[in-house]
Image (cartoon, rainbow, N blue to C red; front, side, top):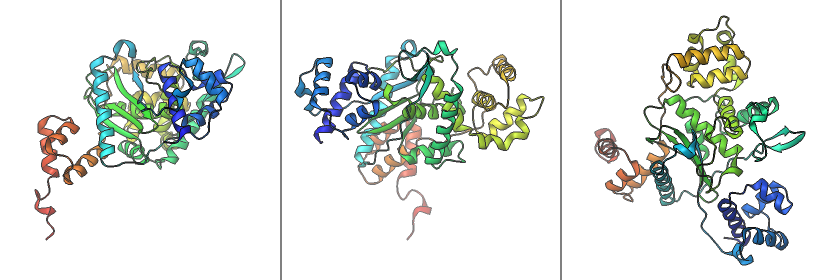
Amino acid sequence: MKTPEIIGKNIQKQMDEHSITALELAKLIGITRQTLANYLTGESVIDSEKLSILSKYFNKPFDYFFQEVETKLSFMFRATNPKENMDTKSLLKIQSYIEKYFKLSRTINESIIYVPEQYNLTIKYNSKTVSIEDPALKFSELNYKLPADLENTLEVIAYEQRRKLGAEESIGSEIVSSLETAGIKILFKKIDNLNLFAMSAYNIDKGFFILVNDHPSISEERKLFSLVHEYAHLILHRDCYSSNHEYGDYGSKKNILEATADAFAGYFLMPRYMLKKYDAVLNKRPLSMSDLMYVKQELKVSLMALIMTAYRYKYINELIKKKAFDVLYKRGYGKKEPESTLQLLKNQKYEFMIRSLFLSDKLNENEVRELLDDDNLIADKKLKLWKPGVNNLDILE
């Protein structure tokens, strides 16, 4: 590893351990956040004067920054009140899944790492332009609503990402495939903690990872929304990832980072040009829940997400939105999905890697069972299907 990269990784390690954001550190040494980003990736070399400031600030000897270290994964969780609801058992289980996935990647020599574009969002706040990651920003002073110009920016970014991922018309499982094809490592696994919908992590050496809670009590539509929500965190809030932010407050519904991720997910899953195909339905008055259900099933999205996105596109007003949510909660759909019809294709890339290694005798049956982490009956069924020569249709001569 080159010296600038080693220095950058050690600076990043200290940022993680001291829970300091890129914005805060950039201000400390009098540079822009982009310049700091170049230091962290090794694209630029930090000068001795600035490195001396960091040495004193982090209370580390100057030569510490030249010592090669192994970086850790950084985590961001999407959970309700994560400090209270994220238990140690769930956390350890998630960490084991991540390690298994990356161990598998190393075994097949997967060297291509996809680094999605990073967006730096700002808003006008107290007569100044500030980053939405600025700790001084109080979302309550915005009445817990995103400014219109930020909403517009998120819509543009969502469309741009659709295009870059080659997913302009994708719905349902096609969106999962688009993200995996681009290089995002995705895993659906059952976590008993129903307060955790999904989490994301990234490491400059290992890539970008999203785990979605595949618990049967969570609808497929909400799993898809959670997946895109976490992708939003990876591209919109990357400076907030830190090994010391394992719990953070990212799950708070009244957090501006969560609000932007939710808005992005809605715009991404239901771009305006796709909803426009249903103008005749959405513009009906009176609009019924049956009308919304029809559009929801066509686009394979959650009904709550559709209501919010239709509101953002001004298909419905505040009163209709409130009535729709009231009906949902009265009918017991606060956490359940009405008439769920979506069935996502899951873990296709993960299982393809396992199967490839098994067929090339690099994994034995017990190792396959451990990686699949399914019950024995499911694992044995997959192993039987994967074994060569078990099906006469496989024989070509």
